[in-house]
Length: 597
Image (cartoon, rainbow, N blue to C red; front, side):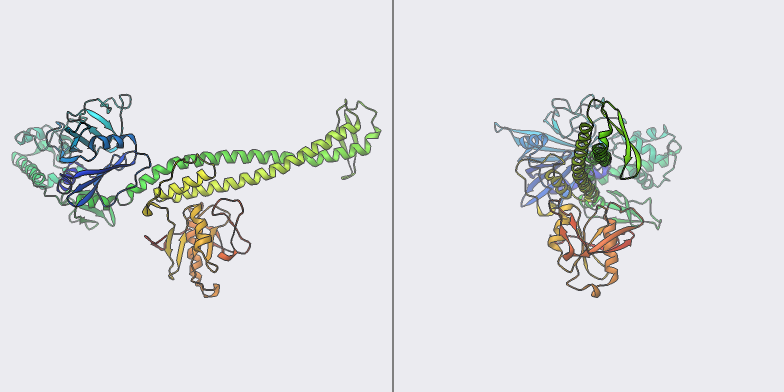
């Protein structure tokens, strides 16, 4: 990723144009490490998205806001107190010296704000884009820490504590120079000390440079990328100086041209300036984007969202996995106990044989040998010598009755455990298919409704329409609509509300998975193309727990043949008339986005 100091400088230039002087009208913390500041400037409202996500630390002007949680986190409340309704006085990028301009990957928003007494003061919001060490920190005017989205104690980091009351500083881990203020006349001395390739020397010597940008500086100087630093002639050293001076002028004049780099159709890097090191290679191409924010939104696309979903689904997966293990162990124990009840008929036969042959006993015997008139074989029946023959017979009949009652209870328990196990397996499959926070919320609600996890209490906040969980919709090769449920609630709705009598329902045979509804437009079976059934079955196989298998058997039937299972979880159906087809799981059809639901 090329989110280097230069790209941050490009973002700041955009922010200065669009939000400098604006008023912070709203602050939400949509995630534990993510903020959105709503900034009113003149008649426009801009949304500044700030993320300290270790996988995707980003900052950009967003197109739309996110949903605020019901209860605001403490850091969000602290921001509302100290900078809510504040005015953004300056937007800058500092060096290790906090008041000096540099290319450190740290954004400073200097915000004026009135306190409880009405006095105007300055607060700084520092946004650190530093990979897994990224953070968002609120500072007093004297750079004392007020709060942070990630508090870091001394036990977590020996380099720097990020706690209220501590003095803020930018860690200097690599002792790099500030390329914007470094005495240019000393450059040749710096370069001649190093025997590394020139680009690597530049990368290791100056803060804010990515390897990509360091290589570009070499090319801007008219030198090979692999040129060794301490072999530069005085003329070549002068060329490097001129390239750095031109680089400084570009930043000063804010002459940025955001570009995405492609290898084939895959975007693999981006830059705030044109890139020449891949010129002439037909496998590479570039796309210039209107603004730094627009580039980040396009480059990362769904990556940031998918990473959030993956993070959020991890806890649900762990909980579901634990429940599955517990249910499997419980079922195994019940089945073992059920197997033990198979001895019940032996107890009944012992009682009957004792009733028939007990007259031959005189008392005190430890066993009775007699013919089993059911099998014609000799039978040895253990006896309690302290009991009479009839009392022993009664004891065996009581054991039989108890085993019979136990068997009946266990049969019911095994059936219930199998139903629960299948339900949990279907939930796990739904978690795997989840594409948004709304999908996970629907799954979490289902797990709460059925007692698998603690149900969230309190008033439920209404979801925005765009945040609600939606099924997937595809168009078959012949133009028919194919709905695919992503969780049990959607499966229920698709099968019993969206589907109509002649529509066809598809589902992996005896395995958890999505319900697929093929809308047939009221046509009879004979009027429908064979390809429709194959494509719908491939979707049902793909969105099942066996989606990675070579072949999957899929049942299908008309909606009119479906019935709900009384008392079962949503999405569970029974049917007695169906066809089956063996297909390879595939996802090859056109998907329809943004459809009414």
